[in-house]
Image 1 (tube, rainbow, N blue to C red):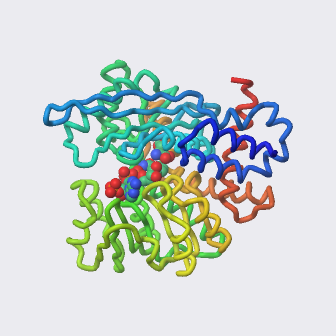
Image 2: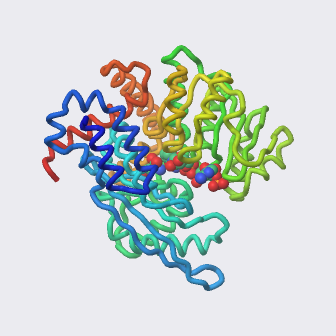
Image 3: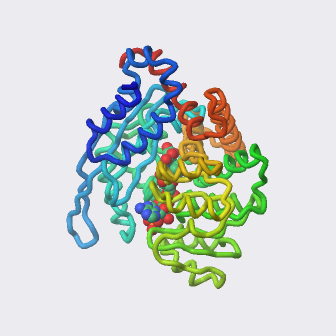
Length: 444
Ligand code: NDP
Ligand code: 2IT
C-alpha cells in the first residue's frame, strides 16, 4: 500500500467519528501524492505524515457561566495546537453549537498549510466552543468569554499560541477575552488578534479576509484572461468574510447579487447594499429578513439556494460543506467560470472534483481566505514593535501577500505537472515549507 493510503487509513482508524477531519486530511494527502512519492523513503523513515496528522496537543475543558436568569450553563471549550514548526500556533476560535473536536481538528489542520502559504512565521492551531452567541445578551457573552479565557489563558501567549476570531467570534468576543487574559496573567501582550483599534488591533484586520479573497480572485481571473470588472458574483454567508468580500468586489467593479445566513438567502439583482447589510448584521445582529424588508429590490428565500442563481464567480463564505455536488452542477450549467473559497472547506470533495473537471477555476480556502490570518500576523508584528501601521500600509501588504500566494500555488502546481490545479498547488506549496522545517528540527 502507498504511504499516503496507509496514513489515510491510520487517520480514520485513530480518529473515529471525525468526518470533517478525515475530509481535510484526505484532500491534502491526495494532492500531495506526487511530492510524497518523489521522497517516499525519506518521509516514511521520518514518519512525517503520521507526525503531521497528529496534533502536538489538544485541550478540552469545561466552561461554566451564569445566564441572565441566574441559571448556570455549561459549555465545552477546545484548543488544538496542531503544528508549530514554522512559528507560534495561530488560528481562530469558533463559537457555534456545531463545534466538536473533529471540527476544530479539521480547521487546525487546514491552518498549518494556510499559515505556511502566507509566507509569515505562524504555525497552525484552532479552538472554540459549542457556545452559541446568537440571542445572548452582552453580559451573557461576557460571562462565557471570561470563563472560557480563565482556562484557555493557561495554554496561550504572544510567543506560544495566538488565537483570533472565526464564526461567532468577532470584535466583541475578542475584547472580553483579551480583558480576562490581561486580568489573570497581568501581562499586556498581543495574545489575541482581531483586537479593537484602541488596544492593539490592526487597521484592515476586520476587512482582511474578504478583501484578501477578492485580491486573490482578481489575480486568478487576470492570469486566466478574465477581468473581474462587471462580473456577476454570488456570495454565501453574511458575516465578517461575506460582508467585506462584497464590499471589495463592488470596489473592483463587480456586482454581488446574493448573500445568505443559516435561515435563508437574499437575491438582490441591483447588487447588495453593503451599508444596509452591515447595519443589519454588524449593528442589529438581525436576520436577513430585515435586509429584505428594507430593500425593495431584494427577494428573500427560506433555506438554501444561493448557488441556483446564474453568476460568473461564486464565493462561498459561510461554513464547511455548503457547496455540494448538485450545486457545482448548477453553477457549471449556468456558466460560472470561477469559485474561490472564503470559508474553510465550504466545497465538498465531489463538488471540487466536478468543478475542476469542468474547467472552473477553483481557489481553495487555505489560499483564498489566508488574508485574514496573514493580517493577524501583521497585527502581531505591530504589537511586537509597539507601533501601528496605516490602513494603506496594511492593505498594501495584504494585497502583495495574496498576489504572491496565487503565484506560489500556480508555480507549485506547474512544477508537478498539474498546471491550473490550484488545490494541488496550495497543498504542495504549503506542505514543502512545513516538511522542511519539521525535518530540520529533528524528532520532536
Ligand atoms: P461569522 O460568524 O461572521 O459569519 C458566518 C456566516 O455564515 C453567517 O452568515 C452565518 O449565518 C453563516 N453560517 C455559519 N454557520 C452556518 C451553518 N452551519 N449553516 C449556514 N450558514 C452558516 O463568521 P466569518 O464570516 O468570520 O466566517 C465565515 C467562514 O470563513 C468560516 O468558514 C470561517 O472559518 C472562515 N474564515 C474566517 C476568517 C476570519 O478572519 N473571520 C478567516 C478565514 C476563514 P448565521 O448568522 O445565521 O449563523
Ligand atoms: O480560518 C482562519 O484563518 C481564521 N479564522 C483567522 C485566524 C487568525 O488567526 O486570524
